[in-house]
Image (cartoon, rainbow, N blue to C red):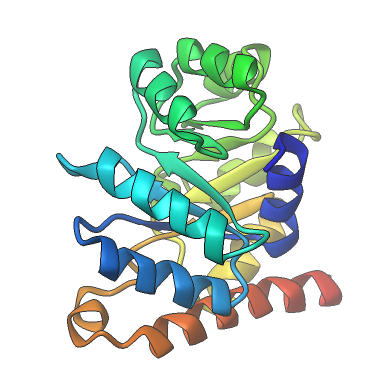
Length: 221
């Protein structure tokens, strides 16, 4: 999927599910449930020893079975790892911190690079390094007032917030009211007990509810 389409989908849907699981079949079920719920961008996080092998299997499945889904990798720290996932075919890369070397790899591959930031200086440096969207993390620590404040000196900055975002009207309204481009949701969409029960219908409904809350906010704001 091309760079522009991924970023447009991220903004249009407004919700980016973030997930990791070592079991390919469990991960497939979660991605399927998210897709049925309306997600069109999905981040698999690079957090386990076997993450790369799981990712490549999932990516092949997505390309074959889930049309229109942009599937990317998160928790990438360095250029070598980024290149490995680019070669595997990732649609985008999300990093927990700001490493311009990863940005260079993404620029050559012409895929979105979404670096993690927590300060105004990091946001500036990220945009100078080519990031079109930045990831504010951890959102619950930094707070929505930070987003509102930086929209003053940087009105055009596109911010996705992750960490502490809740799939509730109050949380969605708070963050989108502050001016975010999108929100990333992980454990709140995929609670351990829900996964243990294999209750993928619950996940589908929660994803759909979260996306609907974004739509409702935009219609009413």
